[in-house]
Length: 364
Ligand code: SF4
Image 1 (cartoon, rainbow, N blue to C red):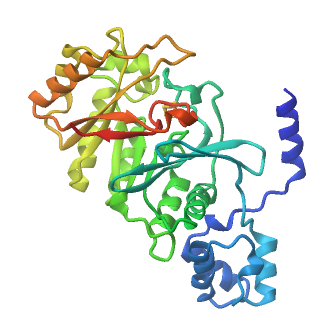
Image 2: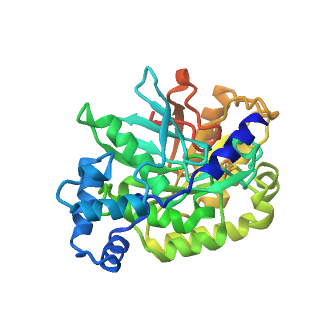
């Protein structure tokens, strides 16, 4: 209660300026022209933002004082304040950032053999309401603006700068449903992928959705080389509706049609996230067989995610033997499958939701 009042106060005190990181290169060029400046300044500004990663507009020393002042009046250069930065024994780093209106969000850096991967958040809270997800408990507070998503990556990259490391991969699987904040997510992707931005290759980026069907069609039509994942978690309509209420609005058969459209349109494979819930919820051999029937004809990959006990819910963990049995059943049916292993558990790094838990693929 006290916190809510304080946040409200803070919200009223702060006149929020848009984040400079929300400006795509072309938008920045147009803004410069509208403000009587030369468009080539946009690339100079981008260099300061994404190569030098400056903390103040005043550090942009090749811009005129007048332009620096205009930028300061019009934009925020810092919209995230690092509240917590925790490093796990396995190198995973969890960041808790406070936004200008007092809300906080989590971003996680994971270490893999293939590089450093960051899991970004797209919303404060989430309205999708998956029954296994702690982020759902408070509902959706607000969407992040594109710049607030971009700045998560910039901040993490800055933390890596000292050791000369680079963020090479990106997963949009943090708190929130990316397709529920579609325009900001797409703007974020364009900036992060831009060779004058952070230049993270499309094939190193993965977007994951709970299944907002109209946006899957839209995303397919964007024809990007970005990796695409769907949180499936069930082999049939009935089980999926129990785990993910979104399935009542966007039913499994329709979801599968949208995914087929995506695969046909892009020629790319889709990854299915499948959380294994114990006590026979969705983890039995017959479920694996049913799953194989559902997706077997698709160019796809399955990530099995053994789910931990969720304190607010009744879900329990699937026994190890059962996990391997499930995996074997899928493999026998010719399905490409891996089991994920948790990362960063000693720092409480889980994002509070199934999909965003920091795990690395275990290939055995
Ligand atoms: S799992 Fe993801 S989509 Fe589902 S409620 Fe949690 S944050 Fe939202």
